[in-house]
Structure formats: C-alpha cells, structure tokens
Length: 284
Length: 269
View 1 (tube, rainbow over the protein chains, first blue to last red):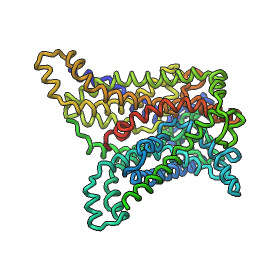
View 2 (tube, chains in turn orange, brown):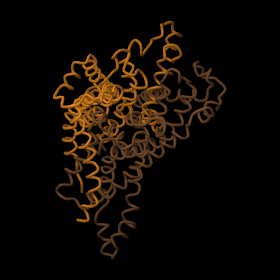
View 3 (cartoon, each protein chain N blue to C red):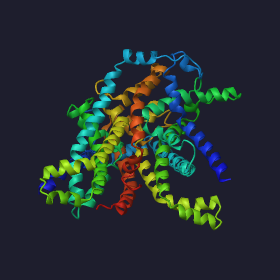
View 4 (cartoon, helix red, strand yellow):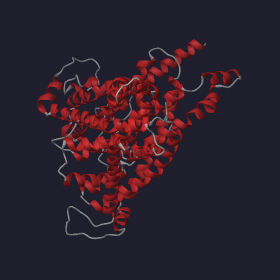
C-alpha cells in the first residue's frame, strides 16, 4: 500500500499529461472554434478535417514533413554508420575528435539554425558564398533557391551526432574476434562491412530511426527561425502548419484536426518502438 | 601497412570532425569580432569583448539566462522528486505490472508535441500560465519525467538488493538503509540523470517559443528573436549564442556515455 504511494504521483501526472490534452485536441477538432470569431460555435463533424485537407497548404505540408523526415533519416543513418565505422579504430586524439563530432547535438536548435542561416548560408556574407566566389562561382541564395534542402541540411547536422553516438556505441559491442575470424577467412573490408557490421547495427539503426522520427515530426524551431515556412509553403511542415493555423490565425478547431493527424502518424511509429523496447526490458 | 592505414583513417576522421564542428567554431570566433568585422571571413583580427558587453547592457540577457536556469534546474528537481520514489519502488519491489507500467510511461514520450500544442496553449491561457516560469517547469517536468524514471530505474537495478537486505538484517531502519546504503551507491547514476534532464530542458525550443514571450522566455526563445531581419547583429548574436551553448556543451561532453542510455531508453548500451 505504502509502496504504491511511491509510484502514484508519477503515474497520475503522466496519465493526465497523456490523456487530458489529447482528449481536448480530439474535442476541439470536432467543434467550430475560432478565437477571432467567438460567435461561431457548435458541433462541426468532420468539417475541420475537410477544411484542413482542402487547404492549399495542407498537402504541401504533409509532403514537406515526409521529405524532411525521410531525407534527415537517410542522411543521418548513412553518414552516422560511416562515421561510426571510421571512428571504430584507434587514432591520434580520438577522444577530442569524438567530442567535436557530437558537439552539434548540444547546441540549442535556435542557435544552430541561426548559425547556418547567417554565417554559412547567407548569400552575401556567408562562408559558402565567400568560398564559391573565391573560386569564381556564383554565390547560392540557399534559402531562396533551395529552402527545403537548406532546412534539411541544418537538421541533419543537428541529428548526425545522435545517430553517430548510438551507432558507435553499438559498434563497440561488436565482438572483435568475429571480425578477425572473417578477415582471416579472406573477407574483404566491404564484405566485412555488409555482412558483419551492418547486420550488427540493425537494431541500433532501428532505434535511431524511430526516436528521430518522433522528434522530426515536431520540427519547429529551425523553420521558425530561418524561413517561417516560406517562401510560399516551401518549408511549411505539419508542425509549422498547426502553429500557424492554431496560434497565428487562432483557428483552434482546424489546428486541432492537424494535431490529431500528427498524433496518428507518431503512434504508428511508437507502436514499433515500444515493441522493440519491450524485448529489451530486463529489470532485475 | 596496418600502421599507415590507421594514420590515413585517423587523418580522415579528424578532417570530418573539424568540418562538423566548424559552424560552432565559427560562431565562437565571430563572438570576439567587432560588429563590422563580423561580416568578413577574416581569421586574423583583434579580438574584442565588446559584443559580450553589448549583449549584457542592451538586452536583458541575464534575465533570459536566469529563466533558462530556473526552468531547467527547477524542472529537473521536480522531475527527480517524482521519479526517484517511483523508480525505487519499481526496481526493488517489482510487481507483474511493473514492466508494462514502465513501457506505458515511455510511450507518453512519443506523443508529438505539436499534437497537443493547441490545447496546452489554451489550458495555459485559462490558468494564467502563459509566459510564466512555472508553466514551463510543468511542461518540462512532464516531458522529462519518463526519461528520469527510466534512467533511475536502470541505475537502481544495478544495485544488488542483497546489500540492502544485509543492512536490514544488521538492524538498519528503512531511513538508514536509504540514506547510508542506497544514496551513496546511486548518487553517480542519479547525477548523470540530472545532467541529462538539464541538457534537454535547456535546449528545448518548441514549447519555449510557443508558450513564452517577454517575461519567462529562456535563452532558446530569446535567441529566436535574432531571426528577424532588423535583429541582425552577427557579433552580438554570436556572443549571446556562445554564452548560451558553452555551459551545456561541457555538461554534454561530461555525460557522453550515459547519454546514449538515456536517449535510447536503454535499448543501446
């Protein structure tokens, strides 16, 4: 009895945190509710969902969300794996180099976005423009010409250390004897990579993909500080769309409908993640 | 042959490390330039602390920094107060339901923030929590609680229950048992848990931007205000960013090893 009391506060807090906002989102998504037009009210049925899916920015936002997520996932896992393999050997000053590689993960998102936007990608004063011009090329107006790609580069830079750190940790647990045995049997480094390293990293890669997916669904600060979703809707993702509908245009109903879609997307991913974690749970 | 190979790969690894770190290095350099000098890519310049002085005198930088400290340390403390008893119970007195409770707690972490942004904003408006430090502490506590419970649970599980039993047989009271046996043994693990929670809360930018403005804005939200075109003062932006990022990066480097466990909920060790 007393023991249950130790656990109760956390359970209750998390239960409320899980259920109350979600129920409210569901409820809001089915009523007419705009803070700018308090007179309009009542049950809306699926009107909000209809309105949302017919909005010209909706499908671009969904497509942008998927592209952004997919691109960042591919870049971070592929480069992360290569980096992990590269760092899985002894070299001079390895500890310091590792610190440099993981550093971007500790930079707050607003700072990373502004560093890239101003110092690296600025079309006039950015380093990229400086280097290109030095070699006789035209400077690139990153956020004007390739807005989504620019945002992807920034976010991939932030998450590469995460993928690297986890894949590298997992790689360290790979049995060296296995690698040596394969090498003695005449396996080439490429065979070694595809038949021993990649299968060993499968599980860790799964974890990276799932955790990144959940965070990438809510990518917001980077877009907010660099492009504000523009030009046009070029960099508007689901998170930014919900923000602009709900908090900028104060249309609570439609914003909530978008929220529900995001929750459904995340739950599909979460289902697999929880299943994987369950296998791993040991306890004592 | 093997020696050369390692040397070459070592050089490649270092080049990659330098490229990845470069934007941060560049920000740090720019912080010591003058506002005019910030726009030129010169590496040779006379370093100045003007931007730092400007940041402190022109804006309420200290206020935003204090908000960041209140919010991250505050939420971490509340988190631990909730998490430690729960993790203690679950690891030393598990029931058949403990596993699924833990997994359920983790699954609350998988709710995308954007899915509940609208109702949270609304609730905050109703209860007067918008733009308050207390409001952010509540959100960050709930956001970090599953990680806090999970990590402390893992650390408690590493402590052999037999040691506590031995203490009990020797006549230690429950309180003595907790204070003299459990506390010293779990302190290293719990402090790295605390550091990781602080890092997460410090760098959180979704809720801080959406729920705060002038009063309770922590550094993440303050620095977002440099994104407007009229706010383009690169040297000052760099100085403000450097101060905001440096302490947390040191913490991050210190907790590198535990970080992997904390981030993957123990799925990768």
